[in-house]
Picture 1: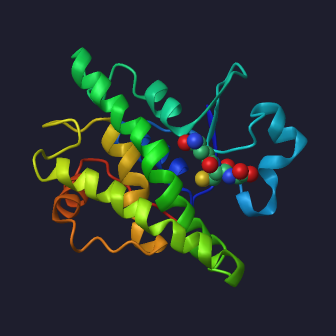
Picture 2 (picture 1 turned 30 degrees about the vertical axis):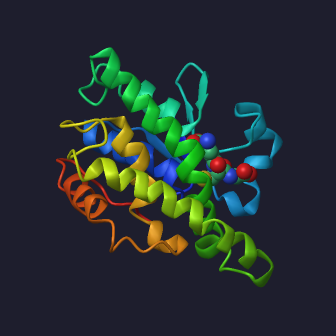
Length: 199
Ligand SMILES: N[C@@H](CCC(=O)N[C@@H](CS)C(=O)NCC(=O)O)C(=O)O
């Protein structure tokens, strides 16, 4: 299997982190999103939505969307809860990540880190701060109560939300006041097999 990804992307890092925690490997094909590689006809044939990460199986089937990819790769592992309620709670956090967290924190980080905070994107960057802090506060509230987002056990929800939370400072989000999040970040970095984001 091949993963097409950009090493600076949190969505792509979810897959690297998951594979490392599971002790599995996939071939990694580096794609630079800034040079337009995701919009080339060859890539659009694999993912018409023109986005990474993308998983390509040996038989040619492809799977897009980071949270779908990690669900596929983690099937049968303890990272997917057995109980119906815990499973749905994991999904709740993953949907939250895509709608209420990533569009603020990842986009602010993109504007700052990838683009170097150009003048013409400063207002957009600023507009992401309130939404990002709201998402962090929601996570923090849960993480003051339980060690992981779904409860006592590490699940895919933690991997999905760890990806951009642990680099949130690169989008201008200081985490000092979020003590629940800070302890959770340490707990995840202590997991066997953990790999940092490499970029
Ligand atoms: N919801 C998608 C988001 C994927 C996404 O936004 N990927 C960005 C990089 S982080 C991308 O490919 N951008 C290039 C483009 O839009 O051309 C996921 O979770 O995988």
